[in-house]
Length: 170
Image 1 (cartoon, rainbow, N blue to C red):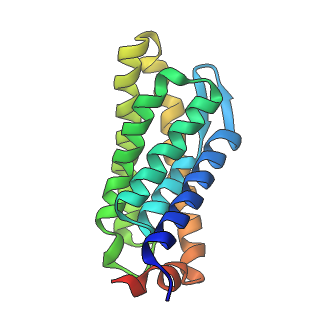
Image 2 (cartoon, one colour; image 1 turned 90 degrees about the horizontal axis):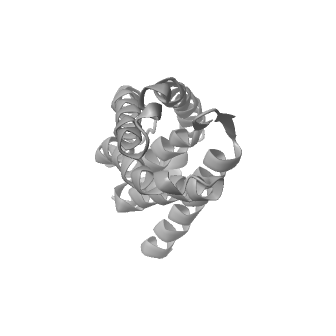
């Protein structure tokens, strides 16, 4: 029998690292920052791992990517925004053996709105000139992350990953 807490910590560390790598190194620089699809792994982590563990992985993985990219001023906002986008997925984590459900697919919409709105507010605070300019990049990031999440979640579901790793913990 595995120690559940140590297992959750290990999986959290893995998701934090994967979110960081996908955000920092699989990204496209744009004039006002960068577009990445790390949010797809945030949704995946929150849909599988759940709870404060997934929120930690989401917030810290993405915040560390901002720091590594040199966007220190965005790090505090990223910590908050990415924690918030994980919450809807965490809320339904234990309700299904599947990661991709109609509800998790739909949750990519409010998560995208939180991302766009959160960084709009952040830009209003940091540099008003970028508030509107950043909206298209954040929209592309949100839409792309939704598509990638759906693809990854379907692949994970076909391998019954969630059931194999987490369902027995109910």
